[in-house]
Amino acid sequence: MLDTSPLSAAVERFADRLRAAPQSRLRQGAAAAGLELARELSVRAQALEEPAGAPREIPDAGVFVVGDQVSVAGLDLAEALRAAGLAPDAATAPSELLDEAVRLVERAEIRAMR
Image 1: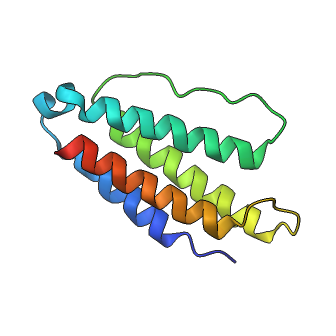
Image 2 (image 1 turned 90 degrees about the horizontal axis):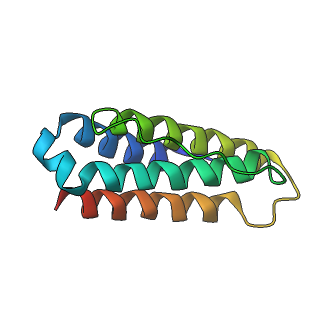
Image 3 (image 1 turned 120 degrees about the vertical axis):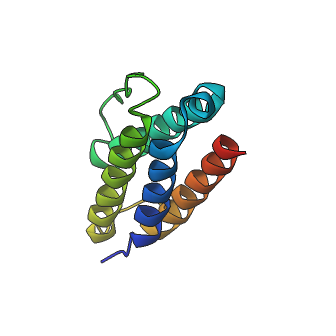
């Protein structure tokens, strides 16, 4: 089974930072970066879970919930990657997708918190 703890840890660290950020930081772009990340993670999870389905977009629910949106989308992707790790016909190795997702989270956190 694929160990997705690096993704879960990165997602939770960034989500916690968003939850603790002051309103001014969130409005200066941290919330937008978080929402963009949550949407991307969600699209990736949906592509693994329902390859033929049209992706659904996470709504903009405001700056104060974006940390939770990042957390939910990231943990959904971690679960989808674990499940994909059990499928023998995966086109791209789930470990590669995991590494890419971790880098995506890390870059979003840097962009949001600078």
